Image (cartoon, rainbow, N blue to C red; front, side, top):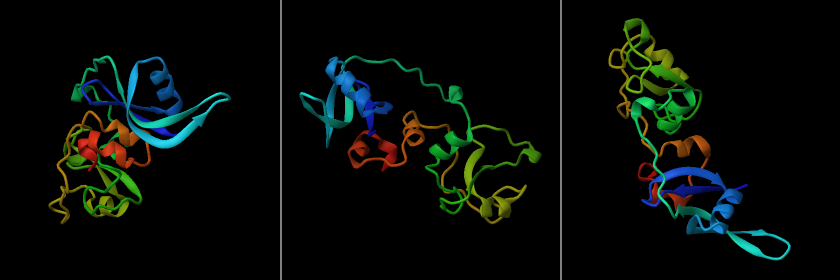
Amino acid sequence: MRKVLVLNTTYEPLNVCSARRALVLLFKGKAEVLEQSGAAFRSERATYELPHVIRLQSYVYVPRRASAARISRHAVFARDRHRCQYCGSDRHLTVDHVVPRCKGGLDSWDNLVTSCAPCNRKKGDRPPQQAGLRLKHKPRPPEPASFVFMHVDHIHESWRPYLSFAS
């Protein structure tokens, strides 16, 4: 089933849910439609247009602490948009320590990046500069809405205005 972007009352991305769950939120009056998909859900007696983006009617508090974000391969790939941070490739991805563990590098958001296997082998146990590599983006804790990349394969055009980092 289709995925729907769920926004807080402040237009902050909160979640991605199924179209069926989005319809339930709409029927209960807990959300409003911001972007329609053009597709329809048909029941025996009615037809309902499926949304692409909905906004909740009441504010949901979500604590956002960078240190609380759990580090995983999937989360590092999502933060880096499934691209090697050295060459930009999207194939044969691995996780690389910018400062190698053997040189005291930690498993932290500031030291982990997505790397393709060839760049990771080229870098080895050296800093990127010594291997002739340069990071495209400085590693950082994930942005609050980067979860979207973990739940969908494709960002729909109607979502882009609500996801500042997806441009």
